[in-house]
Length: 305
Image 1: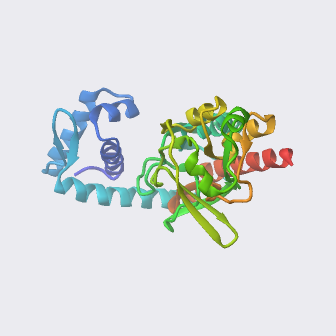
Image 2 (image 1 turned 180 degrees about the vertical axis):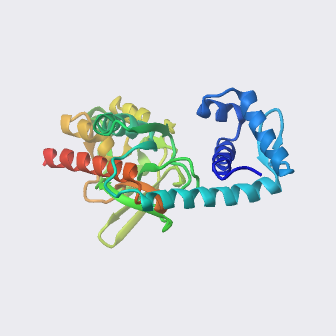
């Protein structure tokens, strides 16, 4: 039987392996060789007397016993984390690993610089930033803090608003001069609209409201992408109308390179939130990072007013 100190480390190892889905990915994360990962798993299975994973040349999958082990391991590891936070001083300096997720363009432009200043302020925190086209599922245990647009409809997570944000419809002056400015939502159907295929939102459907009136427009265009930064560059080049979050296009609106249209109509809100599991709400590293981001965005907003 394993010692009490060995059991949590085995559970953490198996939880990591199951989350990453491959021996090679786990080896990179643990900074060991792939054969060493395989050997450690085999030793666990030999000690337990059951097979925890099915192996093929391309992927691994949980056996029924592996699913039971993983479910209990994650709960126990969470209980250990909670216990350690409870007995630790609430004023302890933030430290440990902090895994942050953000979308590509916004993460590169706004979050990465804040992580740089955060790292200088809290040198004992190790930050891993991963940028993805779409935010990860909230049920995944892959990140500690996710920066996302729109409040998540999930009571199992904490969502702190970082900043107000609007989606705006805009285009370059050259495009509007050549094709005219839409005056009503229905006019959008006659325009070339740049499509962004992101998240679970219905592609090519724009929702607009004015008071009690709501319009849903199916837009079309010759260009589409899953990368918001590319879409903005296409709009700057005069390829069409674009609906994009204000934080992503603010500098182009200020410089006049992009102009908003249909200003009397409101599009769905895209407020910026920091989202993290309830179990991490007392974690010093998470609280310090979210506070740091909110403070920075608040200062940025104030400077623009």
